[in-house]
Image (cartoon, rainbow, N blue to C red; front, side):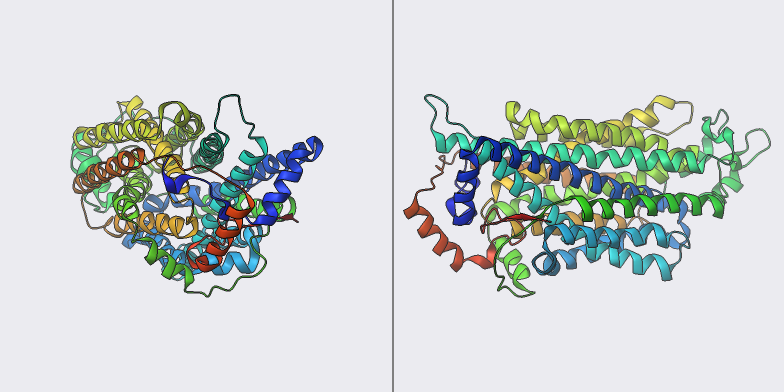
Length: 535
């Protein structure tokens, strides 16, 4: 365990350390506190399910439903571009003003504007909504990461029992790492289920008008697919291509070229809006708040300075490419795979059904990754995910998506979801463990560089052929994994750092905390002390 991944006394307020000791000494209070931690974890997960069922369901259809002038993917690019600015300025200020709980509530309401804007998708509606979502995203994810990491470390302290022949300090450090991974795994199990729920809703709603739309095409024009779909999609007008290759023997235009009716879109977006608002309501009524610190003295630009300062850490610089890759690979599936490998060859109504396989595997393996890391380590999981993505990228370069190859339409995104489960759970956990003493700035960097990956990918989505995009993704993956291995093995060579909570050590570290508060996490309570739960 590296020096920076240990738990130091200055990561909890002295008052909360004493409070946890008191609770731990009382079996009934200990059980009650543990139940409260689990309750809050599950309820936050459910609230996120409501929010991202709505947002992911709507965003997955943008490259297909709102393809005119690149409106859909442009709105997604604006979201992640705004998120970059949001990540540098807003999380500290918003979380300190509202608290973790109410930050999440308000941010979810910001997300709900996106399906609302899709009632009438236009530059004047989608662009403002995208800005609202981007501004909401960074505080939302920062508050979530803070809440989960804080409760994971509280849970570890409450449940830690020294075993015979075991050094208590080191065992607690390992337990914290395991609990953080477990909590993130549980969260992403719920989170990735939004792909299943959201896409299931869109699939049935979009297919409701014509029951035959639930059948795979039995007749297709090979020339149309070879020149316009898969790797050969250069972002041309698919409707014009369908008309060009249409024939009485094999009518390409039957592939839902006119798109769903307005009434169908209204029903779909109405469902998404209601589900998103239910997540905000659950969060507001049922989740306990976390009090971060008694008094906040940092200004609006503190996180920006802390984020820039954090880049002086060589490990953060080395992790930039693999963090950007997380954005590239998610954007490829959302923006390119849905259009080029689903809508183009078989129709937009199949987007949801195909992505359910992606979301299902993503959800299941998100949970499994949280436990598997404890036994196999982090770098083997990263390696497996990289090899899967490598194989899929090569496959996408050679596969022509003919509709008669039914299984491939479902198996390939399922494998992509398996790899994405690793990237999402383990990258989050890596930042949480590697930069445990400076989590606010580290998570801000995580969202910053992941968002840059999204922005670049969505930004050139309408101008670059899919084949060229696959080479870009492959290059980022190779560079990112090479630098990640360097960080991982460099950290493994560092000596273990013990965990002590004696009074003298606490006193010294509390003074050190006050001197360096600008680079510690105000959203978290792990680094800067005390938090009490209150409604």
